[in-house]
Structures are given as structure tokens and as C-alpha cells.
Image (cartoon, rainbow, N blue to C red; front, side, top):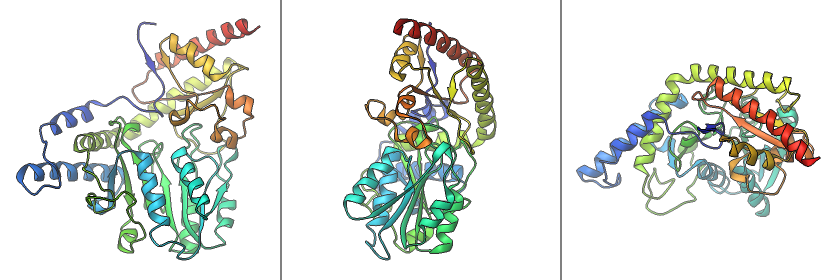
Length: 389
């Protein structure tokens, strides 16, 4: 195959032209945005323009600097949300944290650390891609510091009803902080922080055709006002004192441009991804491939499937040789020998999870690329089964 077919957009996305242009322009403004001279203020202006663009794409009008904090990635943004919340006023009215059993490692590993520090972490089941909202609401019967739940699972595409849980948390105790990892949901499913009752929202540039190395955390004004979040990365006091370190102005400008472009085309993009996903599903169903489709709502860009007793790594190597790039799950854990916790939570056996693949689409993909993947998968299944026998 002469060209590469890229279908691993949940891992990262190609840079869009708008982001590239913005970054190239930003390279001509080398001042430090914290400097008071003219070059520094030029960089500061670029920073705030990008902040406004990202805020607008989130549905937050006139976002203030202390309400959208730029970070190095989604992982750091979630770390600021979680550690910044639980250590702001330790044990102020309890030490319970509620999350799900299928969180991205950036959240799950933080939860494990907090458990080791004496916090109680309650993990709500998400079997078959459906959040057990009744269990989550029942878990709120004791004072709860934080509820942290992902919006869209990065491996199955399950779209969870976090709004219902967050609303219940606020109704139960307004002091409870709600955090949503919306990295896979941003510009893929419609939401605003206010609409889902989220105090904190994590997003990332490179999942929406922006550059790698830039993330952001939205912070509700009430959280800022009541000082229910504190910096865990300290130093020069950049980003309103909540994330020290000189800002990556070039990357942030790319983030802003990508967010603005993606917001303008999000409806058409999501419709196209849904058509491509449905086409892929139909062809795989005809091939007899097991598809791990969430029983509830789902995002338009992710499809998880299980091969007939062929290890995912074996098929990935086969497809890569054909110039086709997909994934066996989260790119953050693709080199791990452990079975994916997300797929185990979904209900797959260890054997099924070990034979599962993730296809993740963008609006840049085409029907021809989907058809080429299906053809290559069919040949791979036939050839690899024959070799095994």
C-alpha cells in the first residue's frame, strides 16, 4: 500500500492547517508573556486570544485567565484538578472521592496515589459502557470531596451520563467539586461545563487537530472564588498562580486555532464520523467480527472490536505492514502487558481484551479508507488464522 491510512485519532490527530498557520505566526513573537516590555505584551496578547478561542469552543463566554489554565497536556490538567482539589483544604468535610472503574490512566493512577495517602476512592461500574448512575448517586450518601468522571471512554467510545451524577452531587452538597475528563468528548459530543454541572473540565489540544504538549483545565468561577483548588506545580506563578512555568505560547496558539476551527465545523464533522463509523460497523458485522458497542450513548469516532482468537498486537503488526494505523487501546498504555481495565470494566474476558482493537476516526478520513481497513482486516484474519493452524 503506497499511502498511510491513519485511523488512530483517539491517540492523536494530524495538525489542522489553521493550527499550523497560527503556530508559524506565533514563532515570530518570541517574548515571554510574563515580561512587561512590548515583546512580552505581544506574547501575552496571543496567549489571551487563544484562551478566548478555547473558552468559546467550550461554550464559556468571556473566559477569564484564572478560569482556563493552560498546561502541558491533558494528564497535567487532570492532575491539577484532582490534586489541586483534594489538597486545597485537606479533609475539610470528608475524604471520599467518587470516580469510575474505567478511567484513563492519568486519572486512575492519581486515584491510586490518593488511596495510598488515606483517601477513600469509590469506583462506579460502567459495564457494557453504561455508567451505573444509581450506584454513583447512592455513593454520595457520605460527605464527598470530589467526583471525577470521564465523559467519553477512550477505548470503547462510551458516552457517560456524568451530568446526572454531577447534578446529584451538587444537590447533595454544594461543596463537592465535580471534575470531568473531557479529552475524548471535546468537540465530539455537545456539552458545556455548565450544562453538565462540572466545576473542572480537562481538555487537550492534540485530540482536536492541535499540537501535542498543550492541555487546559477549565475552572468554574466559584471554585476560584472559594479557593477550592490550589497549585501543585509551583514556581513563578504563571497562569494565575495555578500552573507555574513559562507558557508554551506557540503550542497554545495552535490549540486556540484548532479549537476555533473545530468548533465551527463540529456538527458536520461529527455527522461525517458517524457515517464512517456506521459504514465500518456494517462491513465488520458482515465479516462476523465481534464489535464491543456500548449499550448506552456513545461518541461518533470510536469503535472497539474483538478478533477471532488473534492477538491484537499480531494484527496491528500485520496492518502496519499494509500501511494502516489503528490501536489496541489507549496509546498511553499500548506497551503494557496488562489487560485494559476499560475493556475489563466493559465486560470483556481477558482473552477477548487481548484480541481487541480500537479504530478511531476523524473528519479527515474517507469511505475508501474504511473500506481498505475492512479488506485488510479480512485478509489478515484469513492469513493469520491459517498460519496459526
